Image (cartoon, rainbow, N blue to C red; front, side, top):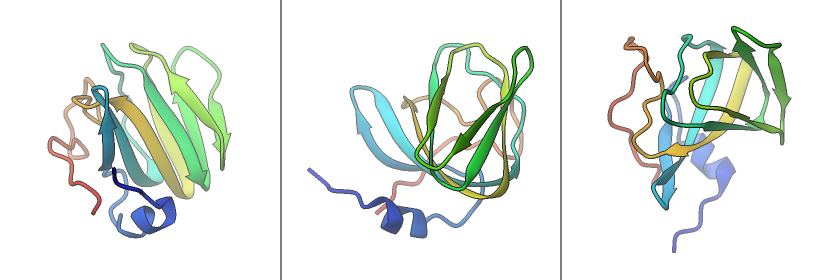
Length: 121
């Protein structure tokens, strides 16, 4: 078993919108990311996605529903197939929980797409 201290793990993340793998369980990945600015509009066809805000503030823009605003210590689960765009107006630290094979940009191929995640040491 390996203990993870979130503050130390987030200190090792430098790039924005580039998730790092913090752990895996039962086919699910625990990913950490720092966010600032707007991400790409996308959806995940076969996977729900949990966004937990460790620090900062995140707005999840939704095409067909009212936006969801998350403050520190809040989370939301974006259901599979729902088009969304995360936006952080200030630096925000995120914990993401989703199936291991889920790409960060879902159905969209862009310069932000991460295909192989670095593991947090």
